[in-house]
Image (cartoon, protein in one colour):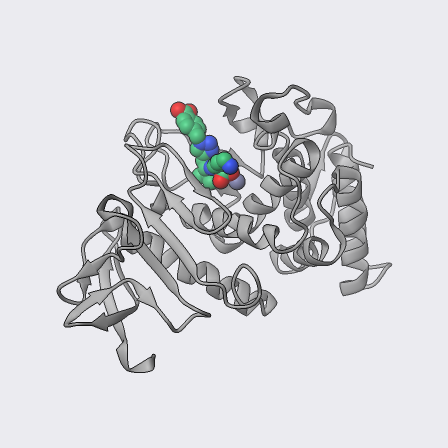
Amino acid sequence: NATNDVTAFGTGVFGERKRFEAQAFDGMFRLFDETRGDGVVTFDNTTGTNLDVVSINKMFTDGSAVDAHANAQITYDYYQDTFGRNSVDDNGQILISAVHVGDNWNNASWNGRQMSYGDGDGIRFHPLAAGLDVAAHEMTHGVIQHTANLIYRNESGALNESFADIFGVMVDRDDWLIGEAIMADGTIGLRSMEDPTDLIERRTQAPYPDHWSRRYTGTLDNGGVHINSSINNKAAYLVSEGGEHFDVTVNGVGREKTEQIYYRALTLYLTRSSDFSMMREAAIQAAGDLYGSNSDAVAAVEQAYDAVGVY
Ligand SMILES: CC(C)[C@H](Cc1cn(Cc2ccc(C(=O)O)cc2)nn1)C(=O)N[C@@H](CCCCN)C(=O)O
Ligand SMILES: [Zn+2]
């Protein structure tokens, strides 16, 4: 309740000072923010489940916990402010983040109920909680689960992954890269939406695809959900920023219209089994609803999907 809400402080993984809502209880402080929906809570997986990260004073020193908590709040605010959505279920569902999961785990995930962050091995990844786009990626899996609930396999799974990346870069608004803050090996990021082929995908050891003709058709990674997501990622980038791609010119309409188009497509038109072709139609429909059927936005969507070979 309001009486326990306090403003606390902390230092993130890379030493940045942060300020955020937390809670006072029994003379201690914990990373439980009751000002957002039914709460934003962060706990340390090494001290056992559901034991909130606590501090004897208002200064939190666990970098992963500070970053995971602050990033969950930023992502909650993005969905509330941009789309009027109250958490993953649009009903204030509590946002739970667990940090220090696994043993130097090189990953982060959404398990249907909570976000989990590994510390990384310091060779490939820094602690993954430090990535705002990572938190937004994981929370978006929760949004997807409560909306189109795209099946996590083949093309619908690639769309699931692409939406997680799209809103990952929309929350972490400064670039079109996923994971740029957490790479320990000198690469520019894990995935690039601007030019997917800039980066080599780990399982296939091939560049991420930027056209449907280059899609992965094997069975690894649930049929390439983290691979073929780059085809839709490139399309979304082109809708926003425009550009010339495989001799197709796209006139971009900017991030503000792009995020609205994709959110409307995700929440109103896509279903569990939607494929890339249905993604194209859903985005055209959403753009038409929002900006008019003869709008630049509709034209940008058609051009973008032409450019990546999806009809
Ligand atoms: C969000 C992003 C930072 C994160 C990055 C990630 C990490 N990994 C594992 C991984 C591990 C090692 C390497 C290496 O090159 O050595 C690369 C990748 N695969 N993807 C990611 O994409 N996680 C998956 C986790 C999926 C878990 C199963 N549902 C997701 O959320 O979709
Ligand atoms: Zn994902």
